[in-house]
Length: 386
Image (cartoon, rainbow, N blue to C red; front, side, top):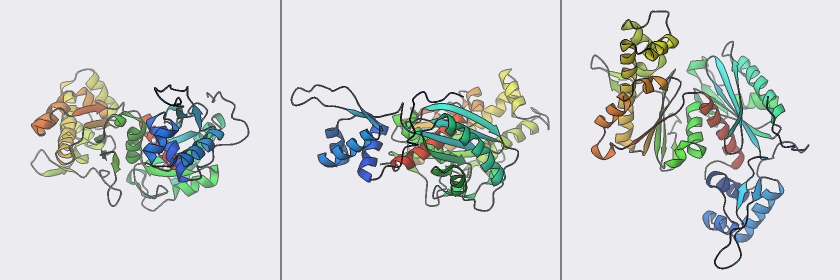
């Protein structure tokens, strides 16, 4: 296990930022890069003395550092400031699936330093807490500057604290996951829906930084939809926007079918078995081997999945007009294998002016999800989005 190389001394992890001016300054530098004190004052609408006090306190706490002075045609050279990433706080992100716990530790800008994967014997809350604790204790021991922990799972979460329900884990009653873990680790803990967390990670530090508006479609155990519109993550009145896979599409018999019943892992396997491409005991590993070997039946199953997702994306484009569509999830490799079925279907279904929409694809690894959950913890540390 690789440890942070810097000696952080005995002062313990960084403490929360005390006031909004400190949080505003730190957050702006974190997300948008180095700026001088005068630039910060103009951008944030703060007085020069307020910015001076905030930056002085942040420098004294080793959360910022000074860059080389930049000469100007008139007046004194500007002295840009930036966040201290190398020796700054660390954050742990935990992505929970039905059988594994994927854990990463990141810098304050979401750069992954280390990752762990632990299996889950079952999905009972106590079992999950015990496995998360094993990973967290190991990572905190190796990275003593951990300032916050995030947990992400497929479910309905309220207040970034309590899981109201999690169908894939079999949780039907509320579980105050944040409080339960905080009792054991004595660090701030936040909990969020895993898709919402990944969306925030892409928006703050990932490929979403390039776009003011983008939609994410994930395909795996379920089908998820996430949207950033004009720089804001959309969650909806009940925090359920895009999380249910209930968007209806025309099925094979002409009746409306939820997209999750056409593109989720279970739906893909069902179609493949019905078509005789897979046996009753075969799973996604066999389907992937058939795709790698160019099997025509497997390729048609993958094309059907890609077309269903493209029809879903076309509906999002019609309503939201985003700059980009981002594809992810553990089964996104099926869409890649069926290329260009997704792109062709999407462009046939959108308006002519929207045919140039950008389509980006994530790796499909769970590290991207876990990194997003770490970003949720980072947001709590810096006071949330501006």
